[in-house]
Amino acid sequence: MWQAEHVKALLEQLGHRVSLLGMTTKGDQILDRSLSKVGGKGLFVKELEVALEEGRADIAVHSLKDVPMDLPEGFALACVMEREDPRDAWVSPVCSTLAELPVNAVVGTSSLRRLVLLREALDALGRRDVRIEPLRGNLDTRLRKLDDGQYHAIVLAAAGLKRLGLSERIRHIFEPAESLPAAGQGALGIEVRADRADLIAALKPLVHQPTWQRVAAERTVSRAMGGSCSMPLAAYAHWNADASALQLDAAWGDPDGRLAMVRVSEHQPVRDLVEAEALGQRVANALRAAGAHPPAAEA
Image 1 (spheres, helix red, strand yellow):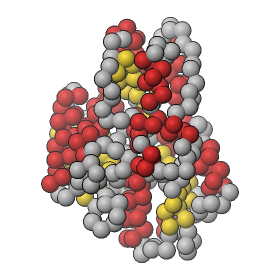
Image 2 (tube, rainbow, N blue to C red):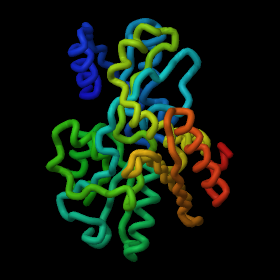
Image 3 (cartoon, helix red, strand yellow):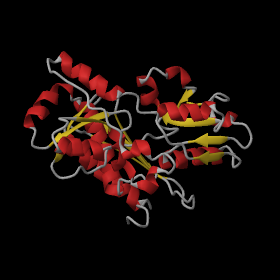
Image 4 (tube, rainbow, N blue to C red):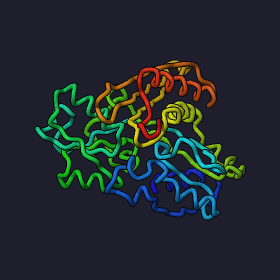
């Protein structure tokens, strides 16, 4: 709702009349199982797409990291807005870092990507005693579970905490070198029916092209690798200091812990979405060449 209110306010500043249609998705309702086991990213967008198709809604505002890599026929991503902080945040009432966790501590996350990155970091510290347990629910629910003592620490997206005015809960923000973000993390995308040229034109002032090119490269990696919640995959692009080249880093982990983490880093000049996607495809090819692969059911 914060995201929808934010977009509503921006559109109203441009002279549009906007009303909100609040909805709850299956992804919001199923909290006792991991996303990778109940249908993945599409659980957060399906009901909104039905509302678009039926004409009950004109636009749908999404966290881009929750949007499937390929939209259904008849729908289009009309706008990617300027990115908020894409990094992961460490939230804990007992310690500021992984190294300070008490013996036999429990860390919560709903993300397989964060799980494999955390496990790699904990192994480097020799902390085999720390358990990483699933954590689902909206932001308030996750924080409440932490405050109730079910976890010693949890890892969340920094963007969500900052947007809701909860920055004071953050004990540490992981730099990308510590915890590589998910494709699209921190960015908002707006979906419409593909035939609504009027809406695509109306949303154009909200488009942030540098962000769109970054997330296009990241999402291409995910698409090429299978793009599901059942694959621990990170992809993060940023502009080099001179802004002439896009740097794309990606990491793939084995959820069973049998294979070492695969990491790839590439950069090239990027002027449009086509070139950004070409960079993403190149990185995905390099990941596969280094041994990364989709889960067995998707390979």
